[in-house]
Picture 1 (cartoon, protein in one colour):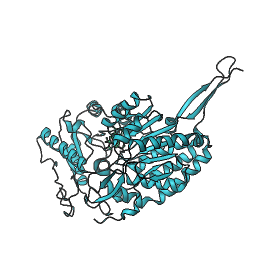
Picture 2 (cartoon, protein in one colour):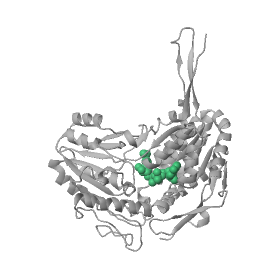
Picture 3 (cartoon, helix red, strand yellow):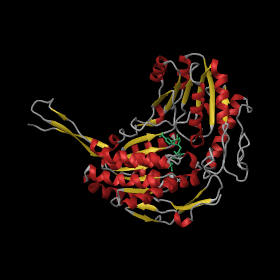
Picture 4 (cartoon, protein in one colour):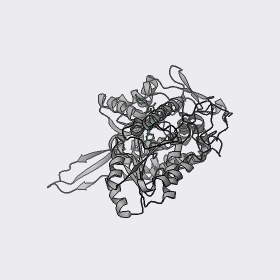
Length: 497
Ligand code: NAD
């Protein structure tokens, strides 16, 4: 693979106070392609000082930005939406280079542009209430922006998560410092250049590349950051939450992991259920928080479902993520590759069945279990892997693996299906496939999950529904129409009349 971008075409500096600047100590890190292992870019790494300067810039920009009316703020967001839409190809290329996302499955730029467009109008929803319920009073509430927001995003869908953090914060009148993931910083830097091109007031949006330490932890514990909005793993979420508690008790939104179940009842459309659960697992090579990594099938249809699922799941074309024909890219990096193989080994141990579709792929080959792939590079490929009859207590069954590894178990009764689906610390996305609508509604109600798909599954995303999770998957909700509240304080004004 030869890189389609010359080094000088990629923005690699930090975006602080309306300017692209190198890091204060000149420190950089190198991003490598998980497909070819070639260096994609050398990027400046935010120091503690850089992070503090970004927060200071956001704090200085806050009074003027929050004083604009929603029309004025919305005009900036509308322009950004257009530029993001027009940058689809470049954003897809940058994410393909950094974390192996196949360009064939890239919809993030258009989806993100819709988010900016939505929030260009949504600032008007920041309205309070009036109350005449106290004798001698005419009371009312004011909804006011919370202040400087810190946002930390992971690598798997950086363009979409950038929009989910930045658009509602700006619409509410907040200013923001966003730290991208060290694994995929380039699309966030491209977005920073679009923000610069729109001409947002300096300091309104600041974009930092770097690691959890120091930049992420400085942001989480900064006394001038009033809200930290984090998407990433449970382990890091705990650290962000603890840092927030130790510092100024800033408001915390955590969007964390999942181990999302799909329940397939015997009256389900097996063709549809198998196609859609495969699509869910195929997205981002299984590196999606909403992937159907646990599938429970009613005993009588288990053989038919398994056969249909296996045929589709294993029918992939592994290869260069920049090749439009590729349907499965490499895992994001060597850490992901090692982690997934570790869980495959644990799955083999728990089931005693390496022959059940579970195979470890060595980095020296790109060929999957169907023999697809060009075998020329040492990309971090893991073939689609299926475990059946897995003990519910097995680590691979309980932990988020974040790879193309699916567990398919059976159930006898509806109660057993619900009990197994809920037997997890996660609660992000669950699906139920059945033609019996009474059962579908009972199960939807019983599932401990932020989203339940009835005869549909992830990545179905409906714009105006909240996105979030039960239990350890989430604190808070995001999504069109649901995020603005996160960025607003509510003030009661008591007026004696
Ligand atoms: P991660 O937790 O390793 O890193 C996420 C971000 O946190 C990165 O930017 C990283 O640099 C930063 N970070 C690391 N240590 C930090 C610290 N001590 N303080 C502050 N920031 C720190 O997660 P990841 O591997 O990048 O992403 C995968 C995880 O994200 C999975 O668990 C996945 O389920 C989750 N995810 C959740 C959603 C959702 O909407 N719920 C969406 C996408 C991904």
